[in-house]
Length: 137
Image (cartoon, rainbow, N blue to C red; front, side):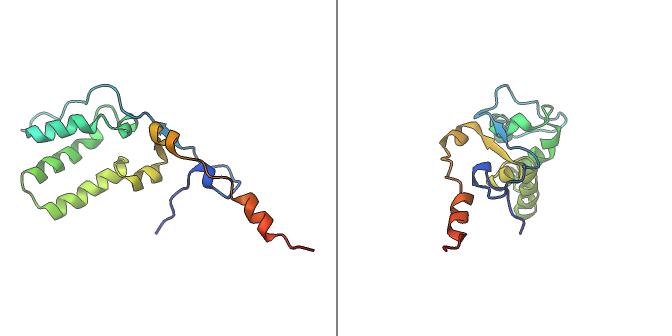
């Protein structure tokens, strides 16, 4: 299993990070892009789409919504009673690509601003380790 990046305050290595964490706003402002035409969307899917675009992660997505169109069709198909096992596996992949679960947020190095303020920064561990490894003499 791959290791996920630790927050900057918990790292022991002194190497500079490859890229910094992105801090997302607590809630995305603005409306959702329209769902694609030519398909009869369920009312539940339309409400879910509007709610999806209010999430903090939506600030990092393509504003046209084109990368999430397949995800919306999968959600609608799941509501229609499609093959839940196959649909949920596909949906999980879209969730990973768009940072919609905690694992994906770590991999993409995204933080929500409200969460960042609540996280207590632990004291540096490296100094403690060095002191314990010194040989008394």
